[in-house]
Amino acid sequence: EKIGYQISRRRIGRIMKQKALVSNYTVAQFKPHVDKCIESKVANLVNRKFDEQPHLNVIVSDLTYIRVGMNWNYICVLVDLFNREIIGFSAGKNKDACLVARAFSTVKVNLGSIQIFHTDRGNEFKNQLIEETLETFHIKRSLSMKGCPYDNAVAEATFKLINTQFVNGKIFNSIEQLQYQLADYVNC
Image (cartoon, rainbow, N blue to C red; front, side):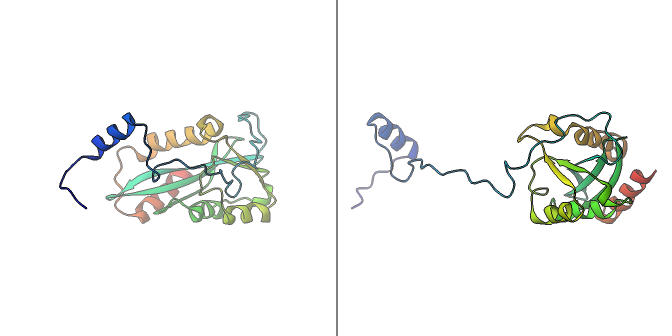
């Protein structure tokens, strides 16, 4: 039965804490961590050995966001560690595996020539579509350690250059405009 008292949650929490009471709704329960897809099974084959790599031995990739109109859109680049050249790129509205797959579709060399594909552990890289692409062309997988941007430093540095040389001062009104100008930037 309601007595008519109004008490804040904060006061109830303070009283419960003083009396060492715990709500059965807020008791933390142990939930085992389940490895998703390839969470911990893939090693970091590159191990920050970014220099003196043969042509197409290691390709690194990452995504970044760019404002288009009033929305955020994304670009993906594939960078050859041999000479830091962008060999594949794409731009799109979604940060997903299709964006990465479109970047692979712009590569002008035989994808079977690539030995290792290295990325961070983002979900856009850890999924069935990318795994099938790598398996089809016999490309080994390498993932950065979780939460460590230094393991993918070349891709991060490439995006710093892209932001400085390509994005700064530009206004993109449509995704098509971004795609055309990105193609011009990469192919100059």
